Length: 329
Image (cartoon, one colour):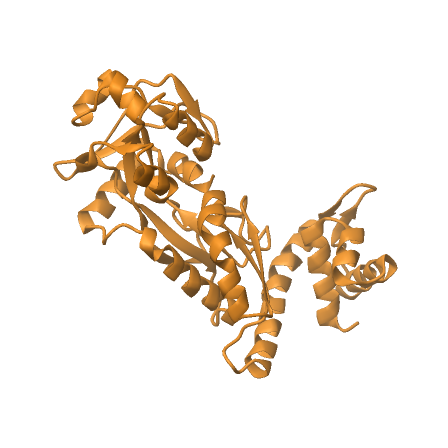
């Protein structure tokens, strides 16, 4: 094996956490994979992996090499792609961190069309992958909803998801329809419980060009968006949620929009990826494709004061992480 092949084997082992699984995915004997690592460690003069009977982990030198090797292998792949596929098709594997709800409801149903256009492109969608662990997880990019991009990453803004307030007809028949935020004290909400822990996330609304947040009584809550929707459908409270998540329910009338004049500001959506002088063709193709795919679900252009209000309020209240947690599920 040449040095590039040795790095390719190492990266696959680091990704799998297993010599056997890496050998299976690479179509090589396990002994060949083990020999490749020994040769690489010998050439570098450093131990790269911790080996136990059940797990393979990275040493400090291994973690450093992994980050550099992933970038190098991506560059090698791009060189081959540039000269071998001049007809517009792209090739290779793309690992993308995508919030589970977006992956299930929007990307997965549309993905066959993209793969038909690029038969040699492979896509891996990781629902638990996000920008904070982009390099460590070996991701090429991540879709982030409501997050601020970490340092050393490029964040391309794709748009912003509209948020809606809604409730079931059964709930409204029993408790009445709130005319505005001042009525919320006499209502219940389905509480959003952040995955990171803590109390119920506050309710947000815009009034007189000011962003407000407040606690609303809640008897039930969930850290899962799909469960929260089911609780709202059961008549257990008002819900504030991304519009595309409840589009079909609003059309069918099983949920009814309330207080449209007091909606929360839209949640920005970014494609986040490592900074590189020449992003890979497959990355550019995917980001352009997903931007077009999500565009119909984005809110109209957000006024400048909307962005400023949201940023100021989230910074002051410390709720940015909680909103981001709810959007990833």
